[in-house]
Image (cartoon, rainbow over all chains, first blue to last red):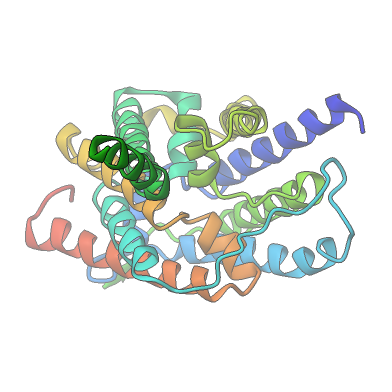
Length: 160
Length: 148
């Protein structure tokens, strides 16, 4: 398993993704926001972006997953969670609000660095800050077992 | 409602390229092409040894934009700008960051990869962010009159 091919494959995938975003004109927030504007100037293009992406992916993914393992990795890492919880919906609602305000979802924000201006730097910096803050909070929340453990140990010592 | 600037052919081709990219990443490395998740693992890594491929993918995203312009397809990209002012951009970016990490995915991870795997979670997430985005835009553009 050549390390160069391993790295190159990811770089090619990312490049193809960014190129696709640019071809689809998803890098233009005006176009994205017009897709969401059913009450005014509606531009249905984005529905075709999703349809194109979905069609290719839905066709090919089952064939890929028939393999024992990926070309340059030991196993497929698919999301294990199947439960539909409040967190999923609340997250979606918050993300949608941000997308509806600025017209930038994460992919186009990053690809737009190829013609960077102050608008793109602003929205990307805010995205990074929001990502860091929420991942930090979630990481704290997801390890209560350790902290309670420490508290119990501390309490026992204090009790002695 | 009036239909404006409808470009179905570049949209379909661009979408198909995105789908191909996601399929290739899965085939090559067994990973889901969810941009918010890939970026999140750089901004606040969950595992220290799991960063390099993410940086390469993100570099590719920017490289793809450069190649698009280098091929002469990017006429007018320098004129692309946001429709809202900086405070609204900050609010929008913050909410996208927070929402995608809480909801574990964005337009690519849930909207394209998840739906392609017929994941019920991704369907619910996609309906949530699409509905919320449509409603938010209606409020911002038509009720508050911002970013017309």
